[in-house]
Amino acid sequence: MSETLRPQSAIDRCGELAALVSRHTDDQGNGVHTTAIESLRFTRTYQPSTMHAVSEPHLAIVVQGKKEALLNEEIYRYSVGQYLLVSVDLPLNGCVVEATPEQPFLGFKLKLDPAQLCEIIAQTNLGIDKNESVRGWCVSDADPSLIDCAIRLTKLLETPQDIPFLSPIIIREIYYRLLTGEQGKAVRQLATTGSNMQRIAEVIRQIKVEFAKPLRIEELAEQANMSASSFHRHFKAVTSMSPLQYQKQLRLLAARQMMLAENVDATQAAYQVGYESTSQFSREYARMFGAPPVRDVERLRMVLLELRL
Image 1 (spheres, one colour):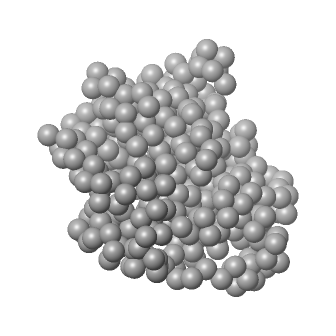
Image 2 (cartoon, one colour):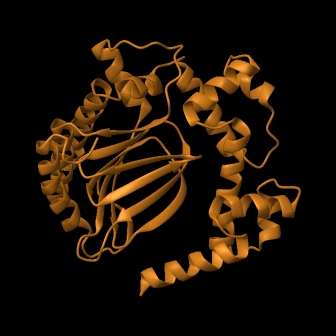
């Protein structure tokens, strides 16, 4: 939905939220910033940028600027007054597409806790079809009531003594708004014991931990209590990719981080993340990141150096 067609009240409320986020990140520079509320993060970026990462379940509201989320070959664009909801661990490519030093990109990000969501579902008797497979990410317009919750949660940072008591209450309200909102079906699937999404999410967590090991689809399907064909179908419905594609993206992201942070060479990184062929690693790496390993890491280091200056 275009910005002009979205409820103006939600966009207006984002102006107040943007001022609060700006105040708490003004002296911290580019990047994702932690807060005194454990599950709450803010993003501040002064220029268009791209970041590949495995995203855990979270709510991300754009309060200033514009962003794109890329998963596999699908692109989702969202701007002020809209949010990205991720309900399972996904290798997302996040691109800030509108940001300047005068008007930086500002984002509000809240990590989701499935256990708390499950508790609210039990108390509110919200219905769910456990056998349905719902996509693990979406972009939606934010309701003004959701923005109001985000504002109240952010304002707590100005009164730290109130955080231990009041932040759980406000976060609980945010969860309720998500569960009863436009994307409530996906959030309810995440938090419902025995749902297809939760079973797929558990397998995803195992793949994340053991991404360097060979993937055995039959064993993963058995863990999810599904046939191999059913498991493959539900996995793709949730993540938009096959289990092998998902594992490959995890391996390439891990290799990139090793080369950047640990200064290992491409050959070492390839073997450590489970590749047997360095030529295959280089081909797939260039396909995902747009350049061969050495050139890509050199480019990343230059970008990081410029951000520090």
